[in-house]
Length: 357
Image 1 (cartoon, rainbow, N blue to C red):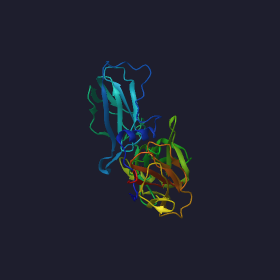
Image 2: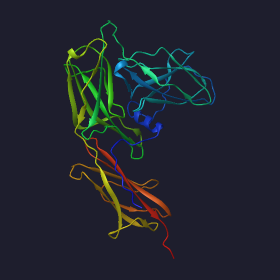
Image 3: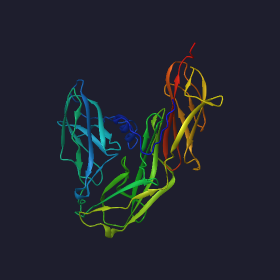
């Protein structure tokens, strides 16, 4: 059986996997809590996990998830030092792995955003689910000068979000937005990641001429864990924001920042044996898998083939695959990408069985 697949948007993944990508955003591991040295111990016991999410509350300007936002967990009767800190994922969600039973507080300390009054959470044997937490921009700095907010979105040229993540292939991608001053220096809190839809918000901005730039960044998984974010080429989109656009208490909405990349599109993936198209083979048969991509004229396409539970891999468009020596349905997966942030996934599934007597 041959399955055709066209992929335009980001793939869907499990919540724990998305958190891995936001460690992708800020931390070295996939959503693991990081204990703080010297933090007071909690009560011993089995304990449970803490799930929740944070979003920017911009009043009449709406709400936006806050990816890469560092959320901390501290003991309510302790000295305030965090016992664990995790980043939010591309949807603003966070997850603290199993914590000892006790009463805790959630908090954050992010430039441009008001600190919470104190969000209480009690950890027991069951998972604790925290309602979505609204985070509001700081209206003034320490000198009572008004602070502004920028809101915008980043898209690829085909109107899709730059966000992409796939645990199986070990790749994660997002749009990074950097706000700089006249001298080209990033302002405090001015470097953020767009969410899964490509939307972003930057708070705590002083009234001055600014420039906003967006680019695609990627992380990849290695034997040592996820790498740091790396820029994908020199492609970026920019927009100028004059100081006059900032009025006290106003959220400045930017025009869409469009990056030139597009996602490749699969037409089909076929398997052949001795030049003949097949969808059923014997165990151990060697087949040749060939994809057809609609944008084959696009230069710099990268092909990555993988087979679950097997060491079989490939980095060329045509994949020579020796199917496993067992009966059942077997699938080879393909990831096609380019140097401008475009990804597409395809697969071919074969029925593997013994020949009839």
